[in-house]
Image 1 (tube, rainbow, N blue to C red):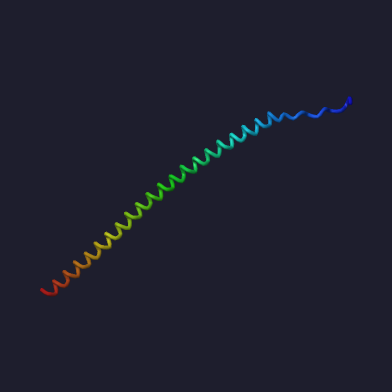
Image 2 (tube, rainbow, N blue to C red; image 1 turned 180 degrees about the vertical axis):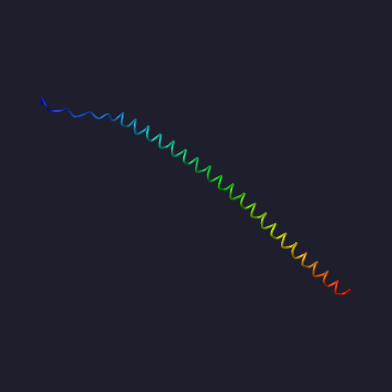
Length: 86
């Protein structure tokens, strides 16, 4: 058996420790990604909320302008009617 190589011993404990360490790193990375996703979703909800408020304010402004235009048109019409009477 003089030229034969002895089989290399495999250290299962060291391999298991590496897998556990790598698994822990992956879990931490998954938690970081999950937390970042939660923050982005909260930010998205906040932006949607702000947008909704601004859109409602814009619609309110449009309606107010429309009401004012109609009032102005009615006033001009009334003035015209009164000027014809005189």
